[in-house]
Image (cartoon, rainbow, N blue to C red; front, side, top):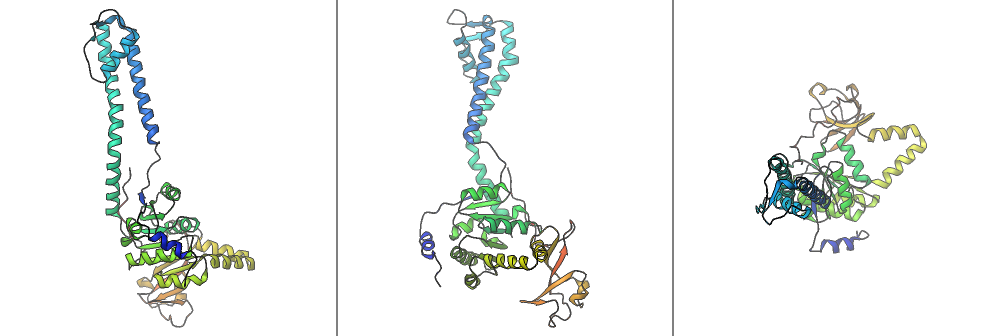
Length: 368
């Protein structure tokens, strides 16, 4: 089967020049040019204040060239003094001038040097600090979640997963749009700018160490290529993808997706249910919106529940997962619950409810 636009995607995959970069969440800072301009303005202000102080006490200074100090001489003295050049051609001779140099000019000299040296050091160390931060982030990244596509579907999917207890530090967003990745980092997620159909882009997202991958691209053909690439890099991760057309769902499963959601059909079914019963539609919307009201969750069977029937469980059991089969709660094949079974239940969300018991913590991502 040939999907629309597949040739265009293949041509993009043949390109040798790929632009991608990693963006980590960080605090909002000023533009570098604005920072430099602000520091230069502060240094100029210190210089002007120093010159005016010297000019105000010009009678207490001795100029080897002869004559009294002019305003230009005051600026000259302030410049060579603050820069620690100190030619010695203009020196404080009076007691008041020397006291002023001790209490005022010297602190201004230190402030002037801090401003200029600080700007230089920050410009020189920013790149090194960012590279160190990226290296440390990669070394601590384990069992995380990769989200390919941060549009409406991808954003909603990851917010739902985070509502179950997943930390934002465990999420890496991959999207070709720099603005979209900026929006993701603003929410606290790490981001990769690049084409997810390229293996080097997914490697930057550490896909080979990921626990689960959510593919929410805008095009079905792109979803197929991303799924193939991700499955090749990580054989054990759980991959869930979304497609627009239902006929493309089998192709996604053949490509390695563990679960496929048809966005158009799912929305249509919810619309149809809401037409038949608006209340039922509200309940379904509540169930799929994790973190509030009623939640549908998957959990293991505990020892106290072994040997019981699904109807005897305190939680409202919807289905029983036994091996690779999903059985209804009333399926005769269920019989008695086993320790290796997993239950899909409906629970009411409370602050103490643990809805994601199988999500393991990971080391925190470094921040500025």
